[in-house]
Length: 290
Length: 338
Image (cartoon, rainbow over all chains, first blue to last red; front, side, top):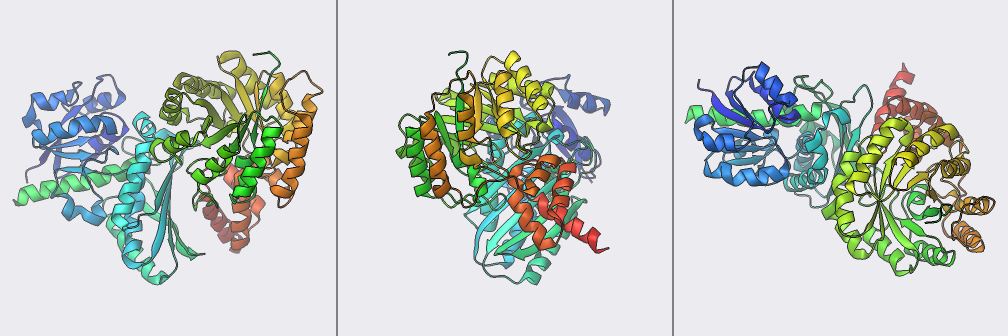
């Protein structure tokens, strides 16, 4: 079994947590951890794990293009806009962790087989990974959906500077993907950062407005999706619903992480990273087949 | 600016939206805007209670969309400025702010929870770069220490904010809390400081005076207290009271009293009072805007809304987390059943 060589661009919370998870993967090997600052916390962590480092960012890949086959871009939306054409020219698979909306949207529990046909994938957002599969599962069995809204609250400590500066892109990307996966044009996304100590777990609520439904059919569809998501995010739990009241289906999810780079409350970090790794592993499996 | 000149900023048509579940009508907006002109009010804020782009199932859907509300207000204003409340996380530059600039909004008040100023950086800078007046608002500033509030306020000042307003969103601040926070801000910021009170514990007007005495140059107020929960600092009372002090507002006393009379018939379905539940909101330090949702959900789950408030307070829930209410009510209902 040959492992797929991957590079992580960006050494913040997302990049560093990805690294720790990749070390456990049977299918992936991290051959480069590249950022801009060798003194960052993430770099120190990677150094302690014996991973090849660079402070040249994308230039490290340009200078040594054979170092990897796949690149996780965990920088920022604006940086990925610069990186995308470079990675395409170098024929690297790009898995974009930022809300840059350049690549094809990927949610493993919904479209993993289709995802591996693309060379640039966008992992949407943490809130998107938590909410869209469920909204999709509901949209598969309910007609006449007039509106969908998703609200996520994450702990302040789990939101690094990149997440904060990209708050508008977070909303726009989540909304775009939500509309695309559910075929409902009228959608809304809200995000809150809560500074409470002890830090809160990621909490996401999905509201679906519709005038007719069979609640048991909705529950079945949601439960099937729940099992699919749990294949890559073990602590993904439904804490409320699905309930139907006043023309609205409500479903609340709690996501807890594995406590790799950030503590378990940072389910937001885990869900997008676990989703990205699930897709990268699928590429590795395809490569081994072919 | 005269040292004793202060700005009274009228939030009636924004915070008051909470009191009527965001069902403002065009008639209410246009008539109130006209009367505020006559009273020589500096600025009126208009919109959904949670501001631009906030109409949602989470916090309540507006009767009118943002554009209609803002255009209606703007058409009826000449000297009085039009202000809006903007929370990043609800509103975005592309979806909401650009349109508001085009409509002619004069003052953009960009708000975040009191520890999260860096989520406002791009919005404040964007608005400032377009030559509009922009303030930074720190919501639920009762939940955060004075020192941290100052750090957050300095960030907003760096981004380009032209004033910082501290919001006592649950009406839970005591006079010494207001004094400590406003004094520290006024002594350390280069820009004016404002205070936004709520009346849960009956202190909104007196806390506003404390804020002015501590160096605040802007005070938010609402006609007849029309606002979330127990309402805000009562505008006509504050303006009257300030004639007894050495602060100048330029507001016409009879005009603002007429505005209060108008509000009775135009805006208030019921008088804004300090309900028993509002006292609990103040004591539990949970945002006043939660009241109506908590009352509705507690009835459904047959739990005591006061218990729901205190439990949400224990969990340090902030504005925007209204989806937590069902979660808490359900758990309380299960515990009760055992």
